[in-house]
Length: 50
Image 1 (cartoon, rainbow, N blue to C red):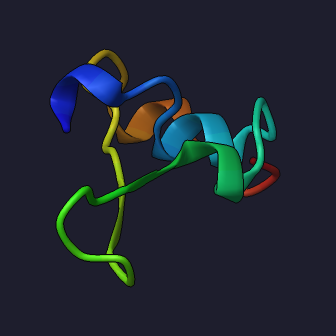
Image 2 (tube, helix red, strand yellow; image 1 turned 45 degrees about the vertical axis):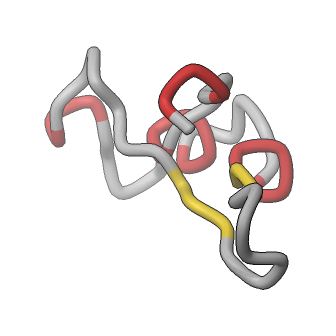
């Protein structure tokens, strides 16, 4: 799953992509998707405006 990450939570909040684009579907379970956390930015990258 880690190799399939293109967008993460911060990208969604900053509107760099849609939630649908950022979600990674699990290969084993049809109803399971994962939203990756940012590995390069911390909580200070977020503001109340996004």
